Length: 341
Image (tube, rainbow, N blue to C red; front, side, top):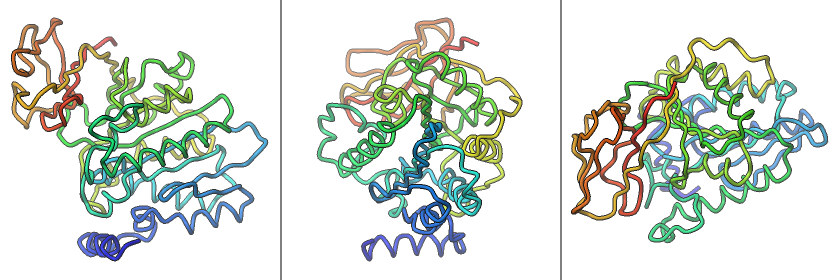
């Protein structure tokens, strides 16, 4: 780690009143302690790239689970949740019932306390990156793709990828998930059931990629994958971890191979009605930055304008998700969804 990176993490620790050692280690992409504990318990352990840990027990036909956090450096709640969960599991390592890949995404951005360094890492998982190709995150995406390909390339047929995030803006549904519609039906049903166990309030079935990590895993490796939004961005060490109890419990159960728990409430399911793409610097949203995710708009309402093109609501009602006029030209500036169940 560079001196500047060390200082940034130290400042984060001091600002949070001292991070628990497990959280500090994960935030620094240091898997040394947990890797040793899993190795001592007889697992095959590898560190394929900085911030990545692979734990296997060969020859047993186990379920393969990838869990990623920190793809955006300011989304710190899932980092803390996974740090505590992984620390506890490594001390009881024989209970790990799956082959596991853990990925801490944008390590440099986490250390800097920023969302990204040059560009959004979660738009880099695409064959053609255009203007994004020179960003620092492009090289990091290549490392993540290589590690993910190696992990799932040696995996059995049951593959999961849970990419844990928190959202920039408030939401009508504080927790929600985006599931690639191309996930096979049986695997999708199991994933939706797990999301219900984790008390996820809404699920968006997404028909096409925006270059996200979870969609890449589903499209290229057949994983039951999801981007899971778990509340709001927060400062490392200052998140209210009680808000993550349901997802932490569900994730721990998945990794330990425990029987599925009853679903508290079935998530509401939505499908994408239209993508809002920013085509020029003239792009303007028709609502302000206080607009919540899943805000309802009536038919014919203006969503955004982009030069001569105007985006309007096509259905009787559409709900806006991820509205962000500040994305780069050519990227998705929002989703409009309709409820299906």
